[in-house]
Length: 154
Image (tube, rainbow, N blue to C red; front, top):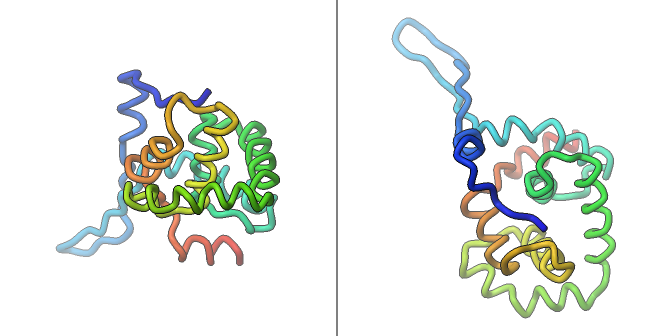
């Protein structure tokens, strides 16, 4: 089962930010703020992406790593099983039927939405697929953007 933590210490760690001075002059400083969780997972995300020849959505890998609490071998196993599951046309059809409902809840990453259906189907969630997708998309965000995907492939 995959659950969100309600522990206060964990909560504070999950929502903390790192600050790094990018540049400064006599009058200004440019500070880059990054989410601690993003920094924590970026190296593992890139490592897994390289193993899959950069063919997997970075936000999907990030979501799986968060869900398995950084256990990289477990994340790779889930990803492999999920990618096999995704190849079956019936599973894509299941998503197509629910796609509008996901989009209405601001769940716009189709890979994460498919993952949530997979996890619900395999009974790895303590709630619905849409709640899982919304939790990871809206609350945690999808930190990787197109620029990251292009940089990662180089």
